[in-house]
Amino acid sequence: MKATDIVFIGLGNMGLPMARNLLRGGYGVSGHDLLAANVAQWVADGGVAAIDPMRAVADAQVVITMLPASKHVEELYSGADGILAHVRPGTLLIDCSTIAPAVARKVAAAAAARGLTMLDAPVSGGTAGAAAGTLTFMVGGSADGFAAAAPFLQAMGKALFHAGDSGSGQTVKMCNNMLLGILMIGTSEAIRLGMANGMDAQALSDIMNKSSGRNWVLDVYNPCPGVMPNAPASNGYAGGFGVDLMLKDLGLALESALATGSAVPLGATARNLYDIHSKSGAGRLDFSSIFEMLGKRGF
Image 1 (spheres, one colour):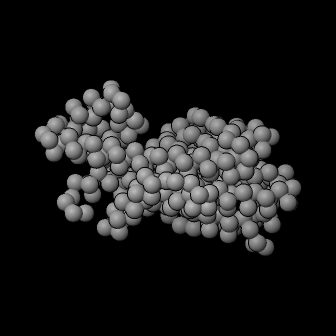
Image 2 (tube, rainbow, N blue to C red):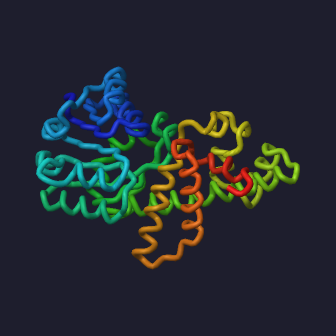
Image 3 (tube, one colour):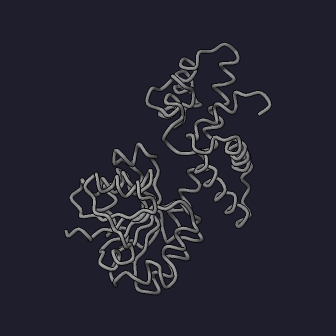
């Protein structure tokens, strides 16, 4: 494949390692990011810089984007200066950002009107999964589009799921992350309560993880420092999945709940707690740092 066959836009904490894995998979990839430091790191890794992203996508067979929020995706794809106006017929478009399902459907409809196949393919697995190539992809769009995208997604992940039509991938991601936020808070509360009663956090976590309270947080992402050496909690809550990103995803869940008349009282509580945590200055810490907030009296 020639160097411009895949254009990857958004070389941040998730996008950069994902693009690296495409390179390792033997694909020719050019990358673009608004931060010069990210592009410089990409070039140092052996990638090609897409200095003019719209010129680059005009020659691409595949365009993959990993952006912060709904507004960024809509702005990048739409309008006279957007991706949809510059790509050639037959280009496969894959957006891996986590955005509102309604926005994913809107952009996909605009792509379809131009005869283009677009998928929403948000991921689960965090920065560690992105680096290891073990991400889970939740994909919305046509079955043919999913089949066409599979080789590229397999280079970046270990599990691919076709969730349904456009927007379905985002819906699954939204529900998953709302549950994850709730689980993190509940697990943190349980460990804090045990510690307050004199329990060792390691012993308590091990016992709960062999009991009916077992969950993903206890399995691989314990929020108490020192329990799991490789978890962000044991590294000053650095890296991983940021508080502000969890807050954004919980906000998406609440927006959807309002639009559909769904009851999400625990999701709403989780969103409020992460909002308090973010406003205390913890926005860039890993979301498991909510454990520290819950240890403060009168937070």
